[in-house]
Image 1 (cartoon, rainbow, N blue to C red):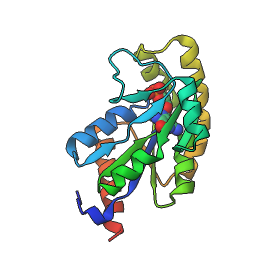
Image 2 (spheres, protein in one colour; image 1 turned 45 degrees about the horizontal axis):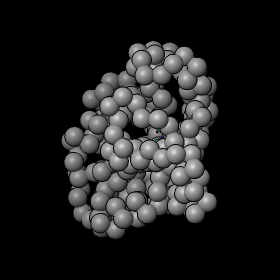
Image 3 (cartoon, rainbow, N blue to C red; image 1 turned 90 degrees about the vertical axis):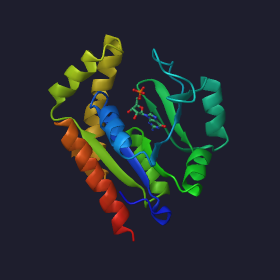
Length: 193
Ligand code: 5GP
């Protein structure tokens, strides 16, 4: 893929919970190590194995509110009872250092980024079907039933918001989804030159 530092763009990836966007992204990042994944802030508790400063910056509600009050976020959103946000400074630093950066955030946040940075490219990862999504979410065994229900309610809204995204990738076949993502990203980078 193109590594020209003049062509840095912000790529924003969203997808419903359990859609496998993490797996698609992991596959993409393994093949394209020049891209870095933004680390978000969140008020949710770490899941087993998650490390502060690696998976997320885990903040208290007060710390998160303080960042909102001081206009520290490029975007932030409430999702399934927790808050998630991307620090402006972090993104500015990465772009200034010429890094290719990917944000993996929810659809509300993605649309906020597009408003502030219209050059950002929004990509939505779709489940092949709602049933497939529900099965994946339950198979993960990381959330309780109430949380799963809350997240499934979000799915419909997210699919509606995805209508405003630049691209959609259907995660039916993992290798194909990764290849589709690569095609979109390299196409966007080459189109800019
Ligand atoms: P999880 O709790 O499963 O890690 O993430 C829940 C949702 O929050 C996912 O849809 C994920 O994309 C989203 N998310 C993670 N970081 C951010 C962020 O910085 N901003 C926004 N708006 N959403 C985020």
